[in-house]
Length: 509
Image (cartoon, rainbow, N blue to C red):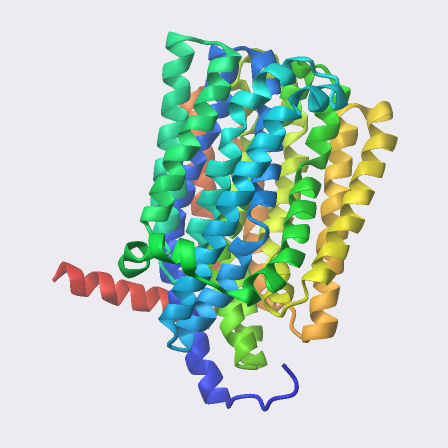
């Protein structure tokens, strides 16, 4: 970026305001999707209650394995689409963007089918690795989800590259939770067997994949079949293969503590860890919702050598994610005892793990945008090395700490892995790209979150469940909002809010 002259402050300011408005508008859409994704946590309630804790432990382990393989099946092309589709659209090259989309979907489809077949055939071997004989009979039924989920990832990434954030809402925020949770509930009443659960998981993601592809822009979708057969885009794999290695390492690092727990503990004990991790993962959902908005914006700034725009966008978006993530995380920690009991009384001891998982996912949510800066700058090998180091630290910590501390040892290892991953990435972004997310504005939502948590813990003395939860959520949000306003909103945030308010007023008139 340093080889080309920087744009003027006026141009950067104009782009910064435009980026903030798009991020704010897209973020509102993604928040609706987050509410839908939160509905997915009902899996952690329905499965243990209707199928039993043992089935939940097995299902959670298999579900994590499927996600690892589905991410691998994308071969990094979903992240490549963030870069190339956004870049070609900004340059006025829609045909090249459509070719990149078709090639990415073709690669994902072929790889997804192959990995699903390999997983089904290798099920007995995988069962021996995890010391779980049940896996041999279940993996062939859930393996088709590898294809469906990988196609979903790539199709949604393409839509986001076209700056169509509603695709994420429609697919991941509405269709996925409704189909998966609904089908699971029906199966739990009609035929509550773990095999039924595996079959449903595989079948549902076929439907979701088709729906995700249908959300592409109309002209791209109309020509998709022809492009799938004939389109060429040589640069996609050159960029995406290092990303594929990074994605596989990244998802393994995300799940390695859970996989170790799955291998070392009985399914009923492992279910406690998975229940806590499922709750903690909600804290990062805000960031994940912004990924498809952030990556194309960073790509445009890097391609135009606009470091000032990149710095401004990076800070504004980090604060925006932090402002939305902190109250969610504080509420999860404050209500942890009641949340784990939704899965059944046997899960009460999982409450001690929740603060660790929420804290790790919160840190990833607030600071994880650094990874997009490196990726859109083409420094995927740096990210790969970071994740390999963090995965190694996580595995070593699990091996050393689990025998001494049990499930808490795995939680300690989880936090240590995130500290290494985020720390190295932030340092590299600061040194190489000369941008960093920290500013005075970022600490304001943090301070407001501390006050919110202190108020929420006071509400836990209320015995009535409904009043307790209501006061915790509404009272906590009131304290957070009041504290945030008192500390002062960022000027960019004020402008974005004012713009959206004017738009809503015009529509209502």
